[in-house]
Image 1 (cartoon, helix red, strand yellow):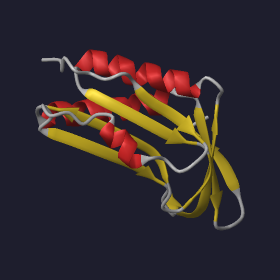
Image 2 (spheres, rainbow, N blue to C red; image 1 turned 90 degrees about the horizontal axis):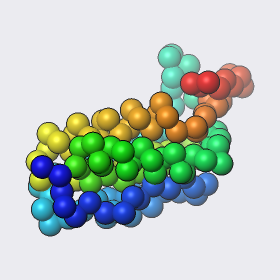
Image 3 (cartoon, rainbow, N blue to C red; image 1 turned 120 degrees about the horizontal axis):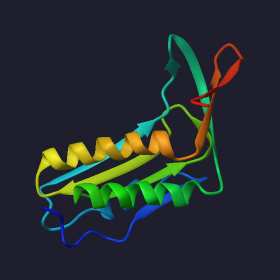
Image 4 (cartoon, rainbow, N blue to C red; image 1 turned 60 degrees about the vertical axis):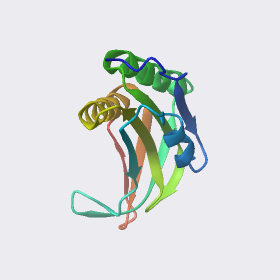
Length: 142
């Protein structure tokens, strides 16, 4: 059953460290028995190659499209959702994506959060360039 208290959409694309506490706070509600937070973190490797940093570039409409993804998944699932994505140059360990889900039960929260993340990765125009330890770089997902 949808949560009658679904909030205004929390969706931000910014060029500064993400406010992970604000992402979580955007979904918390007294009826929620499950509050999940996902952090997409820059790792030091990809397909056997050492990675030194990532550079994210965002289309001017990225935040609007992120908000559409969050709103659509909230409507579809009835789960409270929020997301923020960073752009710019990020180092190993930096959080590139923070997303949260809250619902009365865990199964709905897990499913909605996974669906939201998949939707963000496929529908929001944010591109990344990986810089490798050997000095080479490549764009991913273009």
